[in-house]
Length: 374
Image 1 (cartoon, helix red, strand yellow):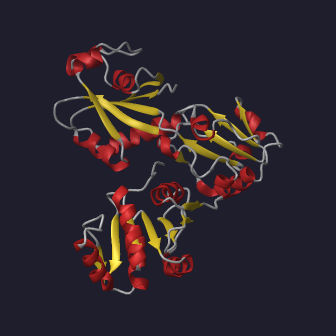
Image 2 (cartoon, helix red, strand yellow):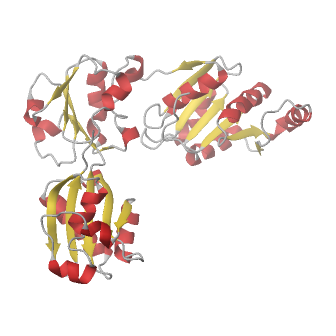
Image 3 (tube, one colour):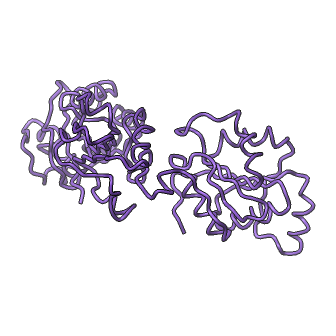
């Protein structure tokens, strides 16, 4: 069965008796999905249940008009599976459409489940993958019309998403996607991140996609678009104007600090270091530091604000790591000669220390490691 990507909350809406039967089949495999049915069909469902022909025990009944109910589900669920006509679905969701970065996945299934149609947010919303999954459950024909999928090429807006990569700026995505599906020459430059992304998805790169190892090669006029996979900030406008940049989670930031170091001090220090060394904050994988037994408030607040994992290490673990800048003063007060450098090395699983200890007196040090990807 296909993986369902980026979808946690699925609403299945059936408005006919056949639709209830179809919804039950889907629900029997997608256990966390919620089924919604107009309450006028309660009697049919109860008879089916009493005869032992129902595959599920929970249905959410609604009495509102479908035209009012569907837009509410649209706002609160990651995916809507609508078991009624495509035209009706379009009319119902049209008033609440926003953009492909925010709209949920929408699937449409006919009343005889001949087809499962990916109708909205095929890539970023995960509708295409969910369509394949539901079609397998129902033994139906999946209908997917996004150009990258039907042409079996790279989905520019989805590349690396399953690996945690973040698109730096969406402004060029549509243009580069058009170049991709029109088989115009596309260059790929990668300086970090998982290197098997294309093998995993397509087994081999499309014939119009070329890997380059010198970033200046991206300027060549033969390349109509560029895909850059890097944690480094790029300033060259000639490159930027025709590129989409992906930020792998490649950087581990080690932080040495005092009990009372504030979140603002930590935030300002990390921002300054990343600016100085031309690194993207979007590529931070985790923050590392010394385990003091109880949380350091400022560090916890910083990680919570940015949604970052905080990995803490004991004094004995940190003391066993060789670092370029050990400190007798740190050892005296913290019980280990290094916190920022040693913790980020451990946190990156022996990654490369690319920024040695940066000192912000009186209570902050920062070091950065880059993870070594296979």
